[in-house]
Amino acid sequence: MKTVRFFLSLLRTSIRASISLRGAFLIESALMIANNLIFVLMWWIFFRQFHSISGWTITDLIALNAVCLGAYGLRQICFGGVKQLSRIILNGGLDPFMTQPKNLLLHLAGSTSLSKGWGSLMTTLILVFLGNLTSSLPLIGIGILSGCLVFTATAILAHSMAFWFGSIESVSKNYCDSVYLFSLYPTNIYSGVLQLVMFTLIPAGIIGYLPVELIRAFTWVKLAILLGSSLALFIFSWFVFHLSLKQYESGNQFGIRL
Image (tube, rainbow, N blue to C red; front, side, top):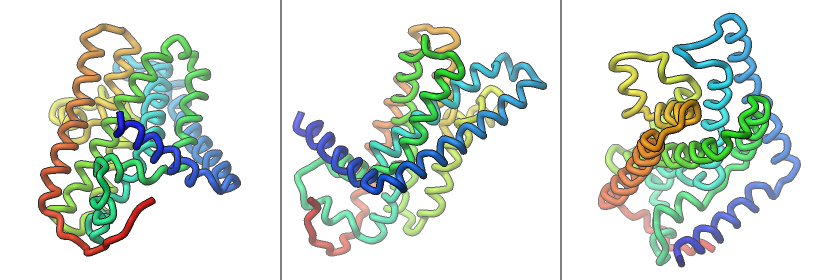
């Protein structure tokens, strides 16, 4: 319980800091919503000519974007610190975090909240009403939570490689961006080895495809696969981070984070 209270307090402070500049926050959120809706509009134009993709309709694509954008937005708000994890590692910036008797990875992940995530969450709400998906809202919520875990896990795994390979911040960022972009497309358009990659090396299928299939036809087996795979990946990333932490060389930064 102490860890939960600590994280909630940390998150509250991070969110307040991220939205402190109200004007910039509102503009950034509005631009994010516009950008996301334009992307969905392109899909709508596509489905005006082609009515389905491997059995998926425009409603399924709207559900896919609602889940993925919500998951990515939630990750930016709650675990924005993972985005700069490799930079902190390379600069020896873990020292101030390690001096405190708190969970290190949770402290790092929650130390930053990205305001642009609110724009993605707002887009999710808009898409739920545009796609008439209010009856599927509980399943969309489950998909958002599981997708948030996967987005966070992939970022932790990518940036943890800095412990081993040094300056790979740009590579880690490009990998995380690729996971996000691939998740916005239906995984069933791929086949063979590429589809396998979409559920393993680039787990976009876990983020978007599995939740939409759950919404299309709910079964307890699908729910167990979705929750089990996302939780397993998150636990694996946690393990990899702490294993990689043994390679860390202190930057001799003795400070206190408040």
